[in-house]
Amino acid sequence: MKQIGLAGTVALALFGLSAPASAVPVVTNSLPFSTFNLAFFGSGTDQHIITPTSGNVGNLHYEFHTGTGAASGVYAGNVSGIAASPYIPQNATQNYFSAGGGGGSVTLSSVDGRTFTGLDLLWGTIDTGTLRNLVVANNSGGSVSGTDLFNGVCLSGCSPDGSKNKYLHIEFDNPFNTLTFSDHDANAFEFNFGVSTTPTTFGAVPEASTWAMMLLGFLGLGFLGYRKSSNSARAFRVA
Image (tube, rainbow, N blue to C red; front, side):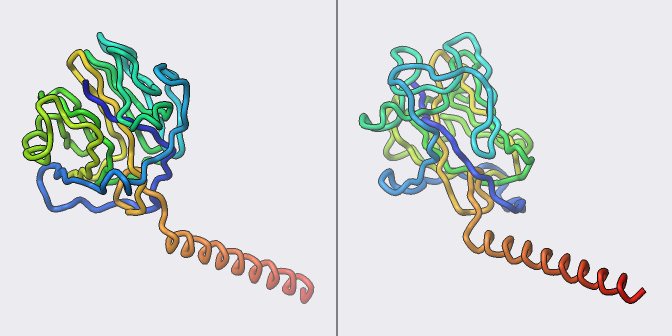
């Protein structure tokens, strides 16, 4: 079964991106399991669907569509025949997104429309098929499927039915602000984002230098406002 624990309290980066030079999405192995910084999406009752209802988490809006298989939504733990958490046993209650099989999907979009080019991802078992475990960057035209991974990063290290806990970085050709995860077979697609400080990566958080620049900017605006107010008061008294 395809999986990818997701979750996401995700803070989006402050600046837009420029498109990379490559013509197709580039997928590379990301950080090792022990150091991969996952977005924390909360925890729930093991072996249950937490909710199939859309909503917001951090600076992301999520929508679910259920196909002919199990309901798409937020899950926790392994649900027999429906979804399987990619987390190690002691994290069985940690929540993740699951796109149900038979055309189900999870769509994530930045609430402020900010664009990105990269995606850090925890990908569970990888199933082959051009419409299996499919990630589409909606407004960039780029997509990555389970077959793409088998033909790329999985040439060494993936078993015939996939490899659990695969941490990847995907770089798309054009900027995007919406991603759709889907599976057109009987199984499911579960996932979780990695939290990055890279401004071009979906799920990124502002770097300390960015916050510092913003703070200086706000202080500068406040000082200018104070000077303007002070000068206006003096002019009024002179008049």
